[in-house]
Length: 297
Image 1 (cartoon, rainbow, N blue to C red):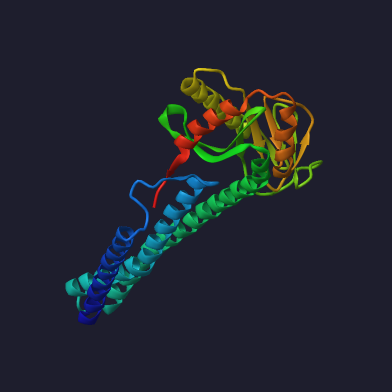
Image 2: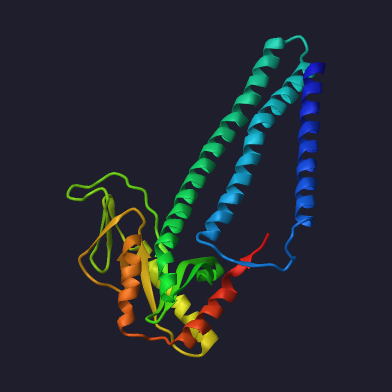
């Protein structure tokens, strides 16, 4: 058992040294950054999800390291303790070590799988926001201003964000992105279609109004924010976008439901009745830019 104790102590020392080395190296790189400390960039598409992915990756690295070392340390420590109490019973020592190895290993494996599922879903949402941002990019050539991942104030003090906001002659467009996986299909529904009747979203597997309600809330918040900042009413339209889906519209509602490829046409077609002049567009854009310029090194 002396050998096992030595291995356990060595593992703990090795992990501690590695953690200290990583922290010192990271700090050194930040100190040598070529940018001033107050440099802030505009948020890119899916910035909130990108940050969430970074945290999930860090948690996953920590959990994987714990999965490799913790069961071994617990097993070794249990075996050492049992052997010191009952040195004449190697089978009892072996059974205690196996139990100490199996229980935490099972829990850690389940935790790793759960974290991987969360990361996979977050990455899917991030990719969807990148796809919508790419669809919006051509609007910049026609004088529209495009902003991404603008921080908002959610209900009950919870943070929220507007996935995309477009400012142009027709007004302001608040765009909510929902990236849904394709799953089981009900009778009479196509696997790649979403049906919108003006009030409800009908997916191949069922109906709901969650995306519509969220898009409406975000639009109301943005209209209220701009009114507080500018002292005037600004027309804000709600758009809900589903990357990778074909949208069948059978009615009209307060929220317009689209696919990414339909976005530029839907926004530009609204310019037939200009609501904002260039000065108003610039003023609104400066307010939005100030709110989402917070990306730092």
